[in-house]
Length: 292
Ligand code: GDP
Image 1 (cartoon, rainbow, N blue to C red):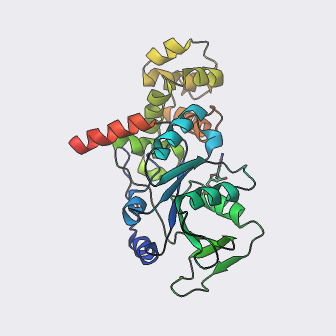
Image 2 (tube, protein in one colour):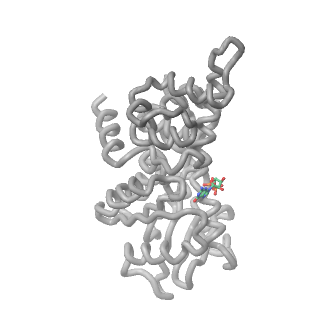
Image 3 (tube, rainbow, N blue to C red):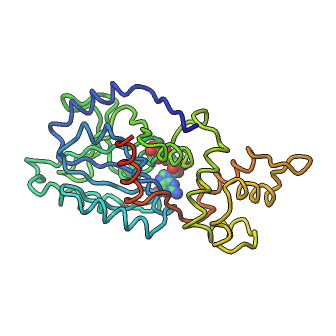
């Protein structure tokens, strides 16, 4: 069984983006640096096709720096695309965002032709945190322009630089089964969409190869990375349960509790800096999905 996620409709979001798209110069797409491929929303790409795009890999403090570099290189190699990595500790991310957007739309800017930028991302990716940091002391102007709906926020980052927050919801989309597990592990889909034990087992399969040392550092089994890499996912979950008192009378595993322990440790960063997918892996999964 995979992750079953049936998000709400995005008709209103689609309509609002379509209304604005013609006058947009750049689209800023916020991604979760731990799962950049899976946290993308294909609707945003579809509606804004052809527009210069800035991919912002957010929560980079939780992600594997080596893999973040791979993803940045991957996106930066695409024509019309730039990529930067950020996290919430950044006190003035506006500078990096403005500079990257100006590079993407060099013919815009100045009072006559202000740069118009749309920012979008799936829930929980850190958009409100970033938008609030960007707003800082600047006054936010809303609804003072023809065609600007009440809910849409315009943030004036510079005199000639307007950032528009996407109105409505950009739900995550599970394009391949791996995306479902990664989105669930990150906490981006609702808890009733998945079985925590199943997601924890899939997460262990992803972690036990490249991140065996991090698992050992957290759970202190006294096992070598090669031994951890060779273990079955169920054995690993049992080993977590044993260390964390997630056992039932008779020594059976309390799988739910062990799974919650692992997921909490991953989400909070207690396990260390981890990225669940590489650009190559994601491309392979997509290709396999298209063939199927
Ligand atoms: P939104 O749903 O996209 O608006 O996401 P929020 O801004 O509400 O952030 C979701 C959660 O992620 C909150 O608990 C934030 O504190 C956390 N968060 C946001 N940005 C970062 C970041 O760069 N690093 C870390 N570690 N946490 C972040």
